[in-house]
Image 1 (cartoon, one colour):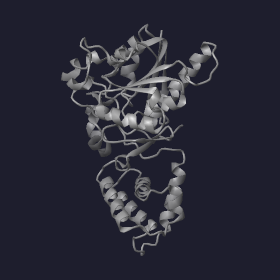
Image 2: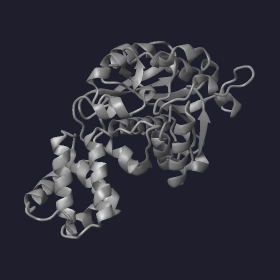
Image 3: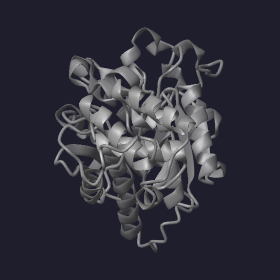
Length: 374
């Protein structure tokens, strides 16, 4: 699934509510719909409420204000888009109207639509999101695409039939957050076993609910861990940017459980090596904080955004641990920040890695870095 992206995408930018290829057409339809509004009508029906909500968000300079107004009304009424356009004169209750305009006011103040509705689409799946997890971005879908492509090529090189069932595959998703990457891979690779790590109990709770909702909870093991190695958690306590909680807000690092010898939580689960490791780590630099949209800067968890002062500081540790946990021929797939490539790609120049490749997103930004362990 591909989405139209605009420059400056990634965690740096607010993930507008739906980047599908149909968005432009919907905007045209929506604009024509709004032009048909009778501004003298009392605002008690669907059309009038939508018009007023749209006007308030436009005045507040909310990104994609037309779509946001529509999604909030759909959420309040429990209806789909087809019903909204088929029943523009349908009266709405005073309670629903009050709730809608309360949400409009919160969105106008900068609160993300996804936090107001509690959901976001990713890879065609509706996922629960809360302030404990980063809102899934469309460009993260490139991680799924690259991972699946690399696995398919590996099967071809080995002369095996491409069944795409994932039979026998062991996969790790580092910093799972909402579980978006792990769940998407589980849906595509029906026989793969996936281990999804996160340092946040709250994030893992959201991910578990999403996995249950989409029927893959029996094939995803959720593990509380910093990266793949619990032994690094306590040492990282004094330097917060070294902690990878890729999609969430984290609790105190000292609360993360490790074995008496500092044993890795992954090792305690009997896993020592993987066929595929994927991660969307924090990659925004703190030096960029002032440039972030308010929806991102004020409402999304800092530890999910910032990878250090420059943004790329986390990758060295992540790549080192991936090398230790991948099988020979295993695949590493990482999402990158908009300016991370020059700092991160040289980390894969070591003899440990081969077949290094970069994939751009639809805005032409280097978004995914992949390699195979020798």
